[in-house]
Length: 382
Image (cartoon, rainbow, N blue to C red):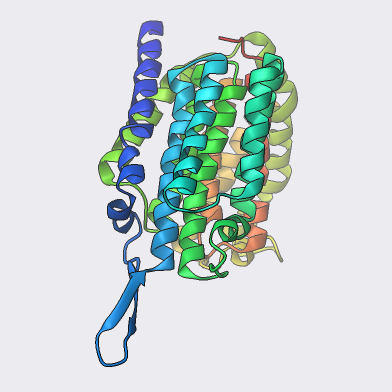
């Protein structure tokens, strides 16, 4: 079994390398041809009628933005893939080289200036990797990744207008740029998690899980995403990545820390809050502000929802009892939350989920984050 687990992780690593190198290269090298496949119905030209007949056409701003940021996605995928191909300082420097190459192409070929703060951070991070002690170089790299990912996710319009001042909020160009920045942010977070993880197997599994969440959102909510063969490759890679670390028993120090921390607290919260919540929903009572009728505009109480909320109340009561009694293993609790967060995230990004509902749904993610912290902090370095 140990041999099979190691083999699955190795195959998942090679699958991820294939996806993030060969798979994404067409997005960088043939971005004009690939963009209509990713974003259906995108306008490629803007045409104006000329005096005396005929018309003058130029490339649409949204197409230019989409094309350039597809190339950034390609560079970001290679940025992450370097950590699957190389180790240590070589991986960090090769990763940064992918970003520098992408920026250089945009400056020299496309006559576009990347955001100055990003260029400054790239220079500073490379200097620290080269000159500072190894631990500080790694920390600088992780910080660089996290800061950029947060910026791309929380304030994408500012980043877009740094390079394309004509883009306006709510425009098709802003929409597609924001969509593509979600992928760029994902790769930065995957790189940060991989470098921060003492175990390459956990780094790969966590990265694949984050990718699955975004892939689900893009395909099912945004009705966009990579071609079907790439989706299939990603799914197989993710399953392989989880086989080893998903089934492995936790060492006793980690088991004890999980039982004394997130597991017992989770059991108490579920028993005293979640169980009554779903029990009330089952009998048609939706609490003010936090009830399902208030956090999801698509919710209606009926036979099917009665069945689901009733089962959730029973299931929650049984699992919370097991958690409070110490019957739930840390391995099971962790696996439960890795995939619960995936489902909750998918609900949070639905157009019918209210802003308060999305915020309320973040509670399970706190337990997932706590679990990940304990797992990584008590896992031996490879």
